[in-house]
Image 1 (cartoon, rainbow, N blue to C red):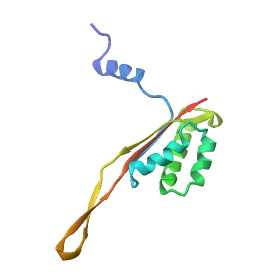
Image 2: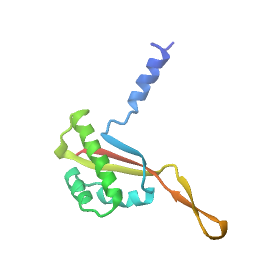
Image 3: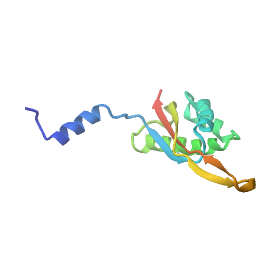
Length: 129
């Protein structure tokens, strides 16, 4: 027989596989996932200070959103996990497709064209060197 209640056993099992890296997410960001990936690939593997510098001078709109997510991940590492900010680097980045907002635009002779306003889910995972 197993010891403990089944919910406690499940909790213990899930804690073994819980990802303890500092992370932050931006769900339903109003930028397409392909445009967000261009910015994310520039900062992958870089130190946090260097990544913030790249994002600060990037002309893309997605860099503004990614910078906010990166600052949130750094704050999570500092406040929740007591990590040294100077030792952090961007270990993994994700930009998955979110739901698409479908709009229509009136065209000539009673036609309507569809406009897809795409969204994305941006995730950043940090780690210490």
